[in-house]
Length: 161
Image (cartoon, rainbow, N blue to C red):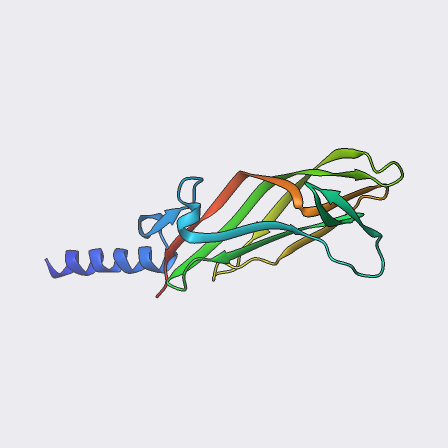
């Protein structure tokens, strides 16, 4: 009897050491917000390198820029979890309202970007940042509609020890 109990205890220790899926949660589209804080946003600001100008938008003077910066950030929701081989892929669509520079006619542009994040054990990933040069078009982050679609999630989360 002692032999069987010691075998069962040994098996349990092996399962714990391996991080067996019996003790972890697979990340899915329905639970990802419980475990990770994902933020995607745009920004622009005068930098002396890009053109910016003022234009009336909805009756108010608004600064418009010839570039838009897409940022992405992933952080673990809690220090109580270990994030194991977590990889997230998402498709971001930016629908930009703005103006053509020469004619000042209202216009729109759409950009798509695939973003991938690999998290560390704490659930944090390296920040994503990409500058989109608009050249002959001006927009403002307030005039950008972002659509974020998570296309793939891999990995699992377990309780931190």
